Image (cartoon, rainbow, N blue to C red):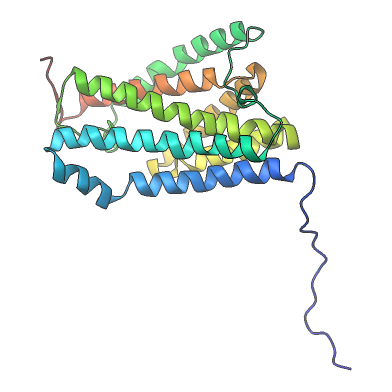
Length: 252
């Protein structure tokens, strides 16, 4: 009789109740970000925009394309897939509702965080390291149209971004595993998505992600996370525009 040389421990690979509510959001977050990141950073796509328009206009159009694409692959598609496969939940389950019972808490937490993040974002935006990446519209001549493109682009993108992290990823996982395991998974992935932007943003995403997750679970909505993130992004970009040595703002 031939002896068995290879041994393995028993592994149960069957799906149990609640497994899909964890696996699906984590996979959607992972692959959604991969698709968004490498598409938005594609030099081939960027070159196509610049081949069709002069530099400043192409920079604005490329920025808006990347933000709209991010909204679709990070927010819209994951939401649709989760609602189709994790049946039994309305759109409000993922934080897209105006809850009157937690409205005051939403307003107070948004205002409190805004008071904290606005000066922090404004100060850090002036640093030379930050100016390497921001503002993301690299037009050399800015006008009010460029400013509005920045605000609109970030609004669209961050709505999808927060819908993914504080809605699609957080809510189902918290129901399946509990609040703290869901928060740990959320913060880990949220921080990891900031790695390409440098150590400072990666580390900073940990406490911010923790606070936004707790507030989202407490209010049942993504609005505080979305608005605070939007305030940070717009403040950062507009401050960076002001202090960038190669950018000129023209009122006309």
